[in-house]
Length: 217
Ligand SMILES: [Zn+2]
Image 1: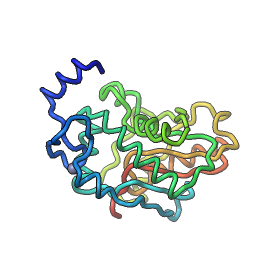
Image 2: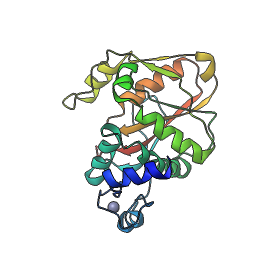
Image 3: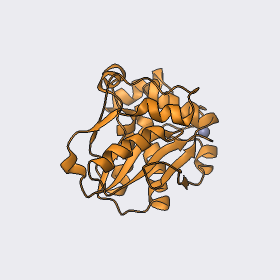
Image 4: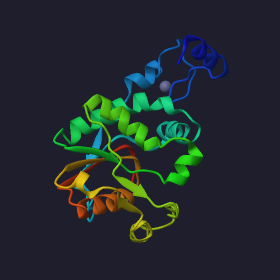
């Protein structure tokens, strides 16, 4: 962005901390001093019955993190990806290591991408990938007509609901690869498990999952 453009944005959209949304004293910073000091340790685990091996996340999806993420996803705060990507890269490095041949991501449907103008998970993958020397490859296509994952569904219903939602665009790209699959927010894991299932079916060797945030189960 040009200096004039940045100046205009400061006027109409004062710089706020991307996590707690408090006004910042100085331009150029992305986090207030308190949030910069208190970024928590990455989280990881395994899920029984899932098609991926392990997962890692940078943050718990609650409170200020959730509000921040919703601004990123729905209110056009795309530049949050720069900071989110650093945290996501750290979670990957600390909890999953670096033995990956391919970084890919859970896409939104083309219809939704057209409406929103961007795919927030691709932005995350690109930002984290820049720190890890990995370039995300689009390997999955999501059908347009997948019902949103309702909060009222239990895990079995979610798994059923999401089955068939993805297809692998070019199986030869994933065959034999150790895949790192990026998602934005991990809830039950039904979505990433289904994405992992089709990647493995297409010949991927292993799938590990990394997300910006994970809900408290
Ligand atoms: Zn803050």
